[in-house]
Image 1 (cartoon, one colour):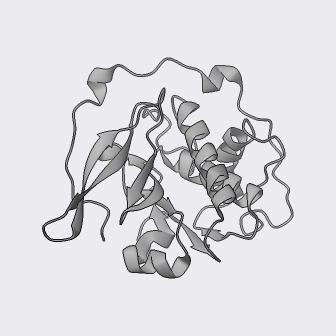
Image 2: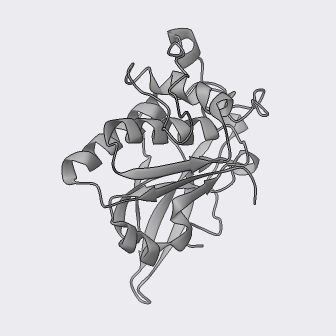
Image 3: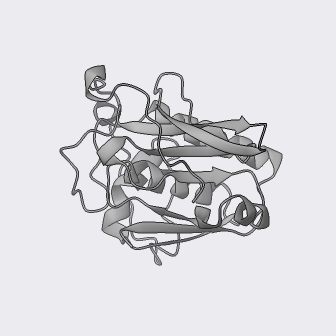
Length: 217
């Protein structure tokens, strides 16, 4: 199947909780590091910042269906909050060959999620650089809203630690989910400002607008 993370909702987030989730997503996109060494660091030499995509959903009103277009993530004006099935959702993926499956977290209940896309509870990152953002997102949502998600992963503490360092730039008290670190032994320092604020790769490396198979799997 490939290296994956699993996150099952217990319920729908409240309006105030969804606001927190959006704030987390925007912060992570604004502060995306140049590179990632999460998930074993297999892609440490590949870019992360400037190499992330999101999906813009468009409704085909004539047939009451949705299609989507892949566009680049804007780190200065984060466009990570999109829609899925017409409902607000956090959506991001690696760009091109540095992508795998999109991370999607909606404002819906788990029952409604299953109607929109049954596979939404899993994100197969295949250890691509954007894995860092997936794990940091899950860490911070779990920390801020502890009863919302049940998180499991094919990665261990060492795979998740870089994401915890990123998450702790948002909230120093963030911890790995209990299902990843049973005894809360992972206690790293946050990423430094030097790691967070680095020059964005040249636009020529990842340009253009792609169309792909979309999110409806």
